[in-house]
Length: 314
Image 1 (cartoon, one colour):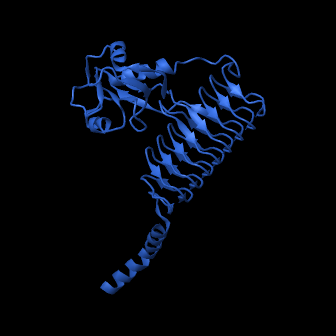
Image 2: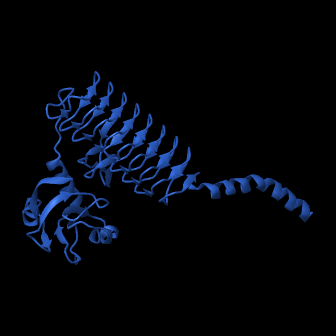
């Protein structure tokens, strides 16, 4: 999430009542992001020691942290007791909650060439490009950006909150979902789909991708161009999918994975680890198709092999 204007580290630390700044106090922060999507200029946070190294070696320029440590060259640390609370506060500040009191927010924009059927709901700061067709009972939540020549079928929800909670002694604390949905040109989305916005990063559907009915796409997922997602596919948060990927019906993909270009995953498979480009996969956990079929053939032969083994032993 990019800030509307840069903010100096010293000013932010003052706002958050930080206990100490380690590094360049005059550095200007230009964005807020989770550790998985940070770029230079971004601020992120870490509050669990086993993740310190991951945060410190990330692309983030400024890190909210709950312990004084030696930062790498070029990093600035803001030390405070509750980094998560401070981070969540910032997301709420720059993506404040504004309840919708009309079907179409007055801050949304729809190109005159696009068609909206009855009962379409557009949240605050939504943008819809040329020649789009948004069918009845579609909901598009705040800050979503829809490109040109996009079709979204009835009942789909674009921009649902991220399913993202921090465990605390008092129960689960919900993160403020401040990310956006970006749907690029020539995308088609079937009926009854849910696409969740990121906590602070963007969920992106690449140009030319086609999504069947009843597909769920988790927070911060990035899907490449010209992909096909069949019915009942579910993709966990922050997963990155390349171009020309096909996921057949009921494929489940775990969170924070990477699937390379030109991958096909056959129906009912479960993806639990990264998948290399240019291969076909099948099974649970999903493996390369030829190897998985050999394993299944061997398994089918196992009873006969056992019978022969016991007979020879007698």
